[in-house]
Length: 495
Image 1: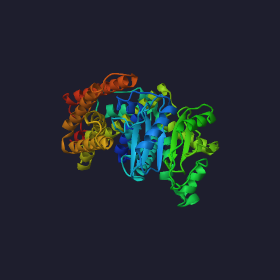
Image 2: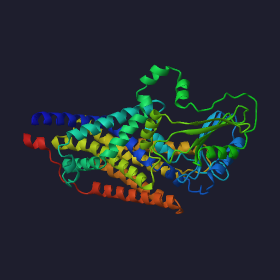
Image 3: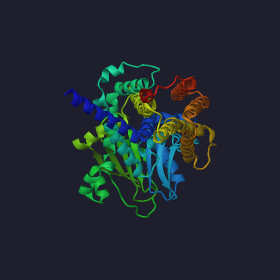
Image 4: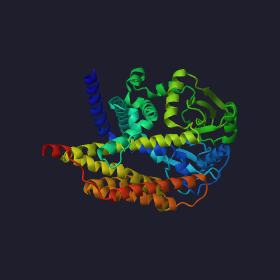
């Protein structure tokens, strides 16, 4: 029986290593971006330090509606997210003159804020779309999540002493040290890692497992959405112009029907047309399993058209799983635990990728394939954080008011990460690691010093950047220390 168990563990260890390697770089990007997304609203505040005004959410939405009515044309819809305790701007998506735009609007003036940026939305989108066109990014993310779940389960089975390993860390012993670190990071937050991976896989199930939807609805996607959200009121534009009725009375009426619960989102379809529809949604930040509630009004007259509250158990089950993954319900302490768990998962993946190379280097000289993998490790593990820091620095360097400013920030982040990937491929790892880590640490330091102190979010953001800069400085110092000779077990045995 012992031989059978050992055989199973060896198979699981082999599967754990290969599944982790094949999509490890994709998983590293997803986990790093997902970890940062925990503080998506706060990152948005940090990247818009001039936007300090606050206003009642209803008044802010009404003001934003007036500004949009005066400053957009040929619009098919406005999609607004109300400000709350964590966000001091109105997040707006709308089309104008054939261009689809994403903007943060000032809650007092309703106008687009001066420092145009995607803020934390960039990391959120990167987490599950990987900057790839729909649906390819989401399909790759879904495949990576499935691989991650396989790696976690096989890793549990492969471990002989899973809990003892958590309390074991031997420094300066090459492969043994990397394995100890990988095990400790993976074991400590294992329940969180399993939960976040499983729920992430479920949230992308419509992309990765489309056959059920295809069998039930075929190409009639509208029928599917109508069944999922039967309370949605939609009307085609009439072509007859009509001013939008004041939003504030509609918002107050919807809030009264929500039992005083805050408003989360407002959709205005066909604004400026007599067929306009205003749909008001209850906020989803207070519960794990959010159940949609919506009140719709005739946009031209303000008359209520429909009222709907979701209460189907299957929808609530899915929404609970979705809510657990998103963590919007989480109070501050839980949010930090999400962040810490995500950071540990990111480091588990990174240490696993490095461990793959260290194991093979200690057994024999690296093959050409493993030397390529080693340099890809450098480019991705050191380059992606450098791209993230470049995104923050671009937010400070680019002039205010230039066209396409938000897109330019994203481009700088992606080109920086690409340049780091090239540097990792060209330079020897003993030079590339400290160079890229040093640039990332220096970037964090400069970013922290570039923001004036003012408000809790800015202070905490700067402190996090300083801590990160110190961590990268320590990594650089360790990289530059003289190294002991790496043992080559098989070579010695052969000799």
